[in-house]
Length: 318
Image 1 (tube, helix red, strand yellow):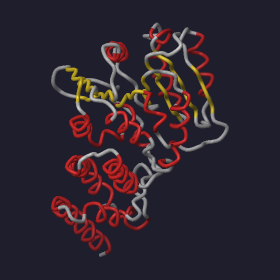
Image 2 (cartoon, one colour; image 1 turned 45 degrees about the vertical axis):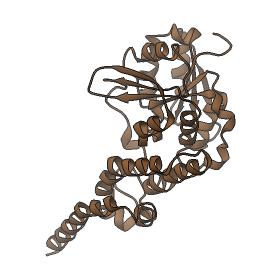
Image 3 (cartoon, helix red, strand yellow; image 1 turned 90 degrees about the vertical axis):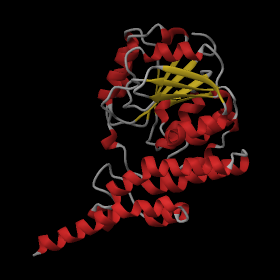
Image 4 (cartoon, one colour; image 1 turned 30 degrees about the horizontal axis):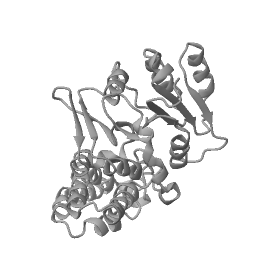
C-alpha cells in the first residue's frame, strides 16, 4: 500500500459480529482496492463477541485490514476519535458497523474520489438516476445535506481538517463527527454529492441504536454546534434557520409523535423502543423552537395522540 492511501474506511464497532462478517465479505469482493487505495481500520469497543477471530479469518483470505480492540468500552465518541487519530487516508469514511455497502459501491466511490479533491463528499440516496455533482459551495452543500450531517455512514471528508478539531470540546455530545464534517464542508468550495439509487443493504440494526437522550442530542447538541459555527465560521443565520427547520420537520417532529406520545416515555423518561431517553424534551424543544410557528403547528397531531391515549386509559380502567 502507498504511504498515504486514498481512503480510510474506519468501522467503530461494539458486538454486531454478524454484520461485521457480512461487511468483510462484501469488502473481500473488492480486495484489490484494499492493497493500494483503501486502508481498513476496525476499532472494537471491547465487544463481548469475538470480532478478532472474524477479522483474522478475512486477513487469511487476503483482505488487508487493521484490527484494534479497546481494553475497556470508551463510549462511541471516544471510539470515533480513536478512528480519526489512527486513519491514514487522504479521505476518511467513518462507516456504521451495520451499514453494509451494496455491491459495487466501493469502486464507484474510489473512482469519483480520484477525479478531484473535495472537502466533504456526501452519499445521497435518490429514486432518480445516478448523478454526481461537484464543486458545490458550502452553503448549498450544507442545506442539501442538512440533518444527514448526523449520519456517519453517508459522509466522507478530507482528513486535512483534523488538526483543526478540538475533540475534547465535542466529547459526550454523541455528535463528534458533525463539527468535522462542517469544517470540511466550509473549508472547501469543491464539495461533492453522489446521488445513488442504492447505498447500503436494506436491513440494519437500528433497534439497538439507543442509550442516549434523543432531544439532548438532536435538538440541544446538534443545533448548538451549528450556532457555534455561525459565530466562528461566518455561516449565515439564514442557513442556520434552514437547517433548524429541516431537521425539525424531517426528523424531530416524526419522532415527537413516536416518542412523546408513548405512556412509558412520559412517565419514566425513556421510550420502550431503542432505549432512547426523552428527559427534558419540552425544555429543549421550547429553547430552540419556542419562537417558530411550525413548532406550534406540529403540536396539533401530538395533542391528539395525548388525548387519545388519555381517553384509552380511562376506558381500560372502567
